[in-house]
Length: 119
Image (cartoon, rainbow, N blue to C red; front, side, top):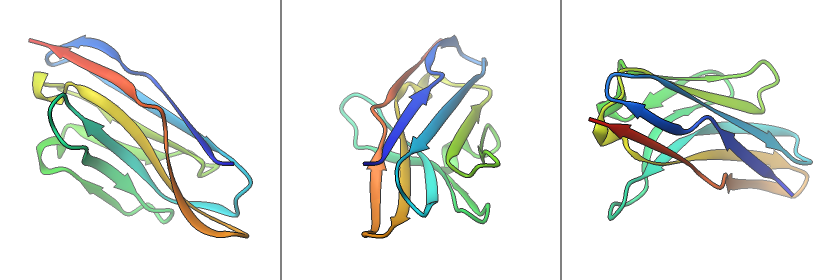
């Protein structure tokens, strides 16, 4: 089985910073694209930032210039540095991982971590 575990959410004032971490584990050959999605109350889940195994990144326009996604050297960890947070960034943030194993490819999600930005 593949597991993704997030950490680092919390409550912060507008303009503050948070760093989210996600550690993936499981019997796989590799973790390919990894990233972060978020879901605010009453809204659909949306892509925040993703990063390929080769380091290519893609960001939601609203977070460009404020958030930075990166991966650890072991390639099974992914981080999201969030600066200049805005109340509109309040949501549950989910780690995402696409992987390859002897069974083929698959996708998994973490359990989510709450980020709340107060004005």
